[in-house]
Amino acid sequence: MHDAVFQGIESEKLKAYAVWEPILRTDNLRGARKATTILPDDRVRHYWIAGQHVGEAFKPALGLKEEVAWDVYLVYRAGVEWIGSRPPKPSFYMHQLHELPNARRLDARTLAAQVRSAIEVTPTRKP
Amino acid sequence: MKDRSILVGSPAAGLLAAACWVGPLIPGAMAPDRAMAMASGPSVRTGNPTSGLAGQWRGHLTVNEEDGTTELIVDLDRIAGRWTGQFDLPAFGVMDYPLDATFSGRRVTLVLSGAQIEFSGALDPATAALTGMAETRGHRDSLVLRRVGAPRLSLEFLRLEAWSGDSTRVEPLSASGGELRTRFNQDRAYTRLLMLLSPT
Image 1: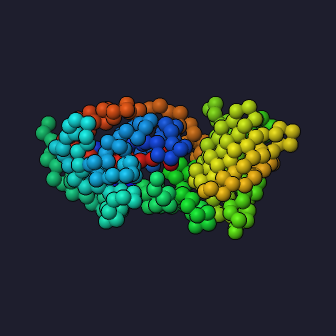
Image 2 (image 1 turned 90 degrees about the horizontal axis):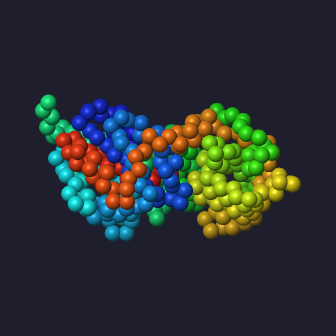
Image 3 (image 1 turned 60 degrees about the vertical axis):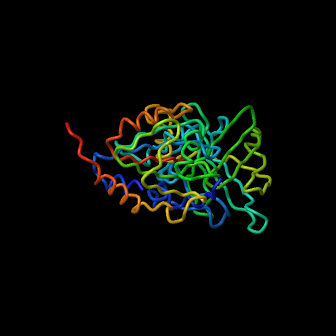
């Protein structure tokens, strides 16, 4: 995924957030710090949350009813804002959960293509 | 909770070409995590084999009633003030997977997440043995691990352990996640990719 998305897309119009959350019993802040090494790109900001609050908050945006949102990848086009406590719906997402459609199961090349497509419609920032 | 085997193909697995997987032989075991496969490679001797848990420990783990036992090798040492280590299941091609260790008094708990094995037992300094019960996906059986020498931990594992103490690598979020929302909105002029992930 890192290779396809971050090495494959050099654009500075992309920002990324990796939110590490405790899913397995052994997940913790120290593990999150280690895990940052799989996404060694300056455009990625890494966060740790000591609970599943963010994963719960994103369930409606993904249409999840049972599973907490994790191992999910959400693409937002420029201009989308997060208003209030409920995160906005992504323009595209991929996942590795049971509850969501198989057609959206994570495929790094598809994800990269969607990110690239979103970037292409991003207006150039004025200085 | 989802079947961990679907972690194959995750961003981690994509990066980890060398990943070997316990799954086919130990049903339900998970794919190697991000740290796991990255932590393999050249190893070094560390620590003092007679100090606390430090050492290389070997025993025979009962996989299940049909498949009998398999050799388990555990390397434990105290790194940066905490017990940690790696394990091997040679028969499954598993080498240098990380584990979580707790040691209090003589009580020892080892969590081998990559193979869904949990050991709970006690250290007997007189015999240099860890004796207790191991559970693998509901199958519980006794396990004795005997210290055979000094621990050997991979250089990559030790490097990751050092990073795990680096507070600049990850920004903690409050329960509301408000900092994430603020950042997301500050970056509204950009395309954004948001990933919710488990460290393991």
